[in-house]
Image 1 (tube, rainbow, N blue to C red):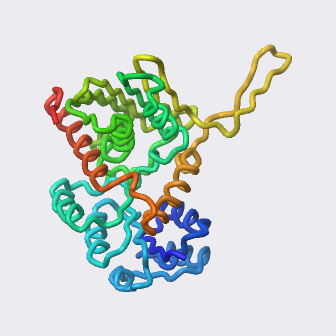
Image 2: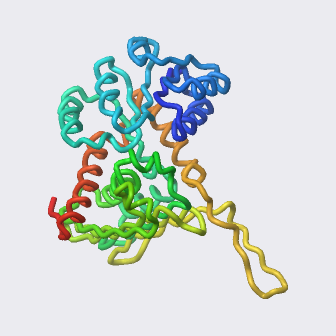
Length: 330
């Protein structure tokens, strides 16, 4: 069994703990959590060791994987410690909000080459990855346009929003990463961002409710991303790849695919899933399975430190575009 130490038992940490517990190759050995109530909950559910001193976890040679799901401003420090103690690393996105800290650690990552997987779970979604494979098989010819729609059913708590880094670093960063997945070696060179907010909360915390970003790649592919912090009809996630010979789509997931036809001469379908953990449940499980294989040296990481760095670089460029009200060149 591969021993895992989970750092952080908040909303996303609890989801990861459940998936780790269900994976036959992984053993949840530690949970690092400062809040007593959450620590007791983890202990009750998984009978794991609860530790408030993270140094003890890193020094324990029986720990194979450090699984980072703590607040963003702790990520780089924990990655650095993981490298020092030669642990396999999983880190939730974003890497950090400080690009200088990331660059400093990136130099170390390139030198030491630790086994690391970033929390870009959408890369592992069967539908999203299937259209990537079809694109690589040239089924739609030359890629010309990428359109991604991401709308959350409801915003996170105001306390989360205040520390999240904003809509581009917290939410749209997934879509920047997906664009790069589909573009391959064709990197983004131009970015333009537009936002709007209707609820007073967003202006108060200096964030944005709605956002649209247009980007252009070196080879001329146009990328259009639309995000919304709310969506009345559920979790709306769609990707369109438009090529010279056709189009590939990865659409929304519903509770099931059944459709009802009745005497009213109309039909009704089941609603969209209403939470990202439900929508991407398969992706999270597949990502975890690949993490186990990464630790064993069977495969290379599908979501690297470099992917995290470039996605944040794009997010930061969006804020510069907003501030300067112009297209930013990378």
